[in-house]
Image (cartoon, rainbow, N blue to C red; front, top):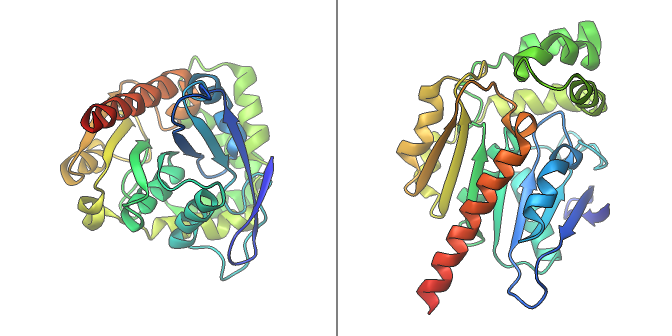
Length: 274
């Protein structure tokens, strides 16, 4: 893992995977993980994507090996700015970005706030903010306080994954997610619950991929379909019979979907230049 110091002094950690052809123009792809996760949750995506792109996987503020932010160091604009500052540090003027769940909300914010920097955007399993979602932060926090984060995850694990999920993977998922600071979640989840990007989705100018599950207990299909209606160039793909955690349940499928989408964009951009 590498270290980057943000402009507000917080130390962020990130991984880079790059097995793309060194003689070809380099395309950078940022992958942003979900809440209660880290860059490690996206490990199965790396072999599929890193052959074609320089893949940058940050640990979000307070997650993984990144430091826990102070009281004034956690907001959606600050999380978006972290991506831009890291891209600057890596010498990357423009990049592709994809996010899972809360990571997708941050990715959308990056595309809204910094439209000239984002080549393509991919949203996996996220509505435009959690304000209108079915998540109840007070209930989540009460359960975590009563049972601990591990107990909360064990109780809700079968709402997140299909019934045929590998039991070994589920244990690993719980072990990884339970490492997240509970104090951080008590701030992070209510902050995200206040977010509604609906009225700004039209500001996303880049080509966008939205991959959504149709059996998500956290959101309705109508809330997901807002993305297609409001983002000018949005391709919507529905994964049937899957709950919320599609990026963990079918990672190779998600990564291949993303790879093909970004490569199509790169080919079109190249043809326009020719």
